[in-house]
Picture 1: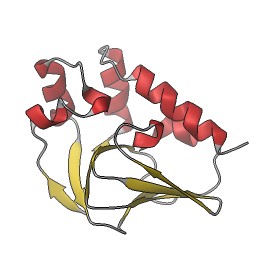
Picture 2 (picture 1 turned 45 degrees about the vertical axis):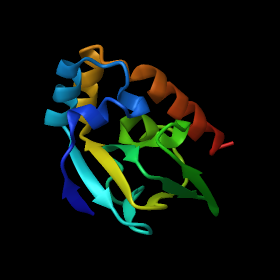
Picture 3 (picture 1 turned 90 degrees about the vertical axis):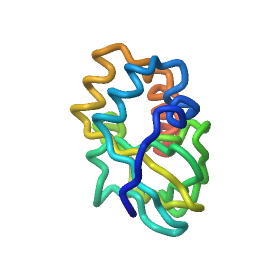
Amino acid sequence: MKASTTYLHLLAKVPMFRGMSNEQLQWVIDHSREWSVEPGAEVASSQRGVASFWTLLDGGWRLEVAGRAIEAGHADPAKWYGGRDMAALGLPPTRLVAARSSYVMEIAQPALDEMLRRGLPLAPHLRAGLDFYRTLIR
């Protein structure tokens, strides 16, 4: 993965961040890291990087879990990965791999907590993702 630059006007078009004010978007940019990822590269896994919250900005990724491979784009419920809430689900080992050239954002858990405390409209996306991840433990 290579460090990349997040542009406010592009972030505003990502489903996870649509509807945020420029001030909110800038706060997200200031408290996150963007990465460029080549196809086949591991973004994170239950062994590495799961403590951070990852969201897909552009491209596509594949979640590998229990012998299954689930592809997702930035508008799918699996558009985010990791963090405290996902870890609490007790999923079997997982691996997140870029399915094509992609851009991802890494947000530390304390920064995500602060975004929610500030009222950034992320809760519906988080709920949809958790609902998706719960289907993997049934």
